[in-house]
Image (cartoon, rainbow, N blue to C red; front, side):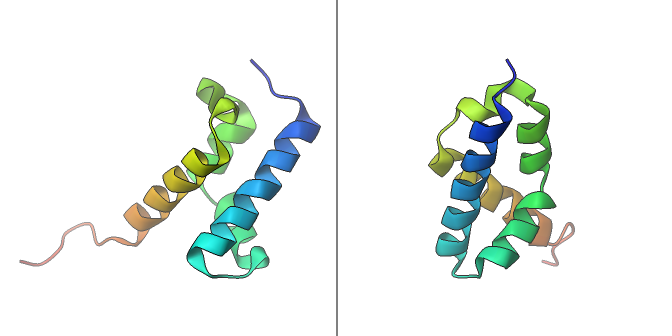
Length: 77
């Protein structure tokens, strides 16, 4: 199912605002993180009806994705 582009853009705005608030960063920085994410790509392509998920769920997924990117791949013991 393909989401209406206008509705999807409103969803993106809510996600960016929520991400900025949760990370205590500017909306501009949150927007950059969101647009560079796999989560955005999947939402934008309509994969797995992710647009049907709540904004909170998607922000949680985005935070998990960002955390995974910053975690070292081979941590020292």
